[in-house]
Image 1 (tube, rainbow, N blue to C red):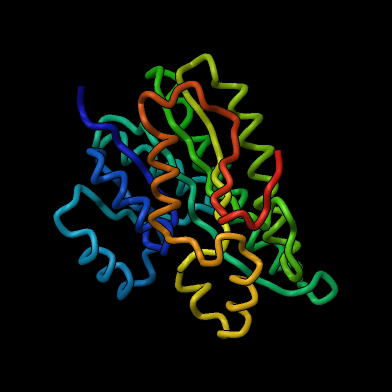
Image 2 (cartoon, rainbow, N blue to C red; image 1 turned 180 degrees about the horizontal axis):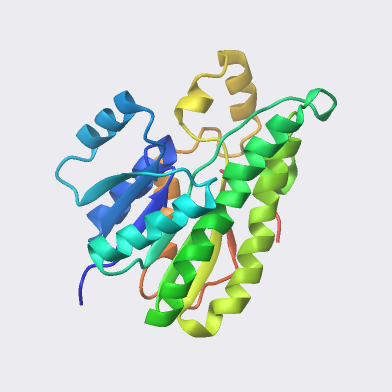
Length: 246
């Protein structure tokens, strides 16, 4: 059997990079899709993944037509697109009373529209081939809400509804659709927080620490395995116990 081909949006971010590495180490051809404007970060990323079967493609997931072009290019270059991990995301934090429409629109466009844009173009091929794995990277804040994040929390909660609905549509076609909801992890965004704020966050996490990006990647790797076909429409929380529910 030929290698599975995986696409990871937001692939050069903190979580995205670890997901790319994990998938490549387990034998996949991986395409990291991200904005092409961060030349320094792209070069750093390429150094980090040297020796692994990981490729970079510039793409804006908020652009429907650009997502279609990306999917077509990957299928032309590699013959297939088997695994899609939607990890692209941004924040524009402020309370609703201060939030400008552009801040709402930007977050929904990347964090939620981006999931639609990529899935809409990728799922047909998965269905036709009788195999596919989609994993949407949501957030604990999509489950609990967070002060100053009505836009982000709405987008991440919306991912769950999207995941369950699409899972039902393609379940009999060999395609699974799941979401993963990370808690606070050791990413550049979290580590840039003031020490006292980060310490308060850690105090509220039952396991007493931040998550590691590789722990999120391990969960994604589990869900996209060929023999994980009986798991679909699920949300897997990876948050150290910060939010627990049925």
